[in-house]
Image (cartoon, rainbow, N blue to C red; front, side, top):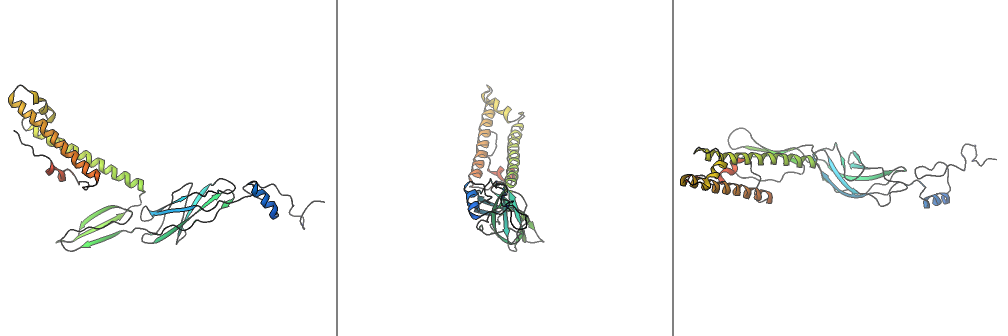
Length: 279
């Protein structure tokens, strides 16, 4: 006589659980025994929530720490869920991004871990964040104004509207990752530095050519000339060259230290360079 439940449709001796599945009907003491052997399918514990931050007007990034107890098998992925709305993002490790969020709306986030046995409980809710919005501030009287850009702002434009002294300040939010934003800023800074260096060298070369030298390098070679006139001009060329580049590096050091803003271009710093005048 086979060992079956009434109806003959389910045996009492199903396959041994393997950590992913447990088919059949089991007594509590049987489950406990397989749990001790780490064979009973068990989902992971809840991850520990970290920090949520907006990376653009519609995308948030959420950090978390994996649970110490991964259940009966390795974790295969994580799901971050936004509240309100229930939008989700998935990934294999922290952080995970959630896209499609609404600018101006406040959200919190939870995260779950999944393994072959299933999905575990959700973490605690994250901090609340408000997605940044496109916006503008209008000033209608002359003056100096300052303001703090919202999180996620990647570019700012100043637009004159109508006549008189009316100016309109706009901030724009781009759907860029922090890495893309940093790369764009660095690219712009490299282009600005190259432009300033080129125009500074051109200023020196043009000065030297005003007395028919091929350039500042040519002028400096005459510093040791046996001709008194050429020697005086060459020595001045060395002095002017050194003072000019020293000033340029001083400005660069101030920008890197954060004690002065990034210049808008060469025209802004040219008045600070040493004056050039033949001896």
